[in-house]
Length: 280
Image (cartoon, rainbow, N blue to C red):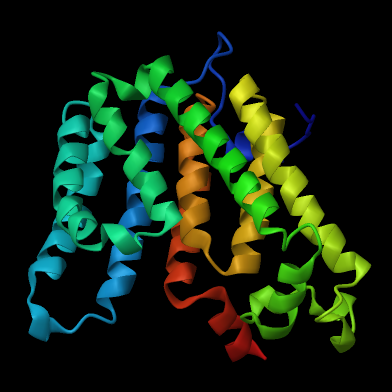
């Protein structure tokens, strides 16, 4: 814990809930807030697709998405929390059955985690659910690491070099580190970034599976997730990960972190790159 004086808030209390007198956290309602945030990321993804939807194909997706939004506040109420999650999942099923072949990895992560909470009478207080999320996230990180190793484009830096030349606005973030002649022969900096991402994913996956639940580890991991979200211009997936990690680490989501996640989801609706392009 970092010591602060005067009116300055403690660092640990800025992002995370305050400890009770016995050193524990009132994590029940804050875990429900975290699962609601994870569900909110799914809602925003569906809402973003509706912006390009042609109503000539029918209004069913609009009604289903609106129903998902209406279910979200009830997740916070202990008595109705599981019922609200059940309603949300049932409203989500039609889009899953229709698009499962093209479903993105982060969408499947939501499918593997949110509905599982229904198997626990009080998922918000059940250590087994927290451990399930921790292990699932650890396996996902190691699977992502394995995929990148097999592709080989991170080891040699070619993927970072390609993005630096042809990627979106934010994906060209590291383009200044190397010259234009390094597209076919990546420079040392691009190789370093690619290897660093591999090491990071492997280390996080192992630490999650081992069961490390330090708030310092959680804070650093969230910082990396936000950095990855900025680079890939994909904050929606990062908000889902952050919300699930808050439950996995058994501290829940503070209201400050929730507010930050809502802002990130709103920004993600338009894309960080669009804001940057508009500003310059």
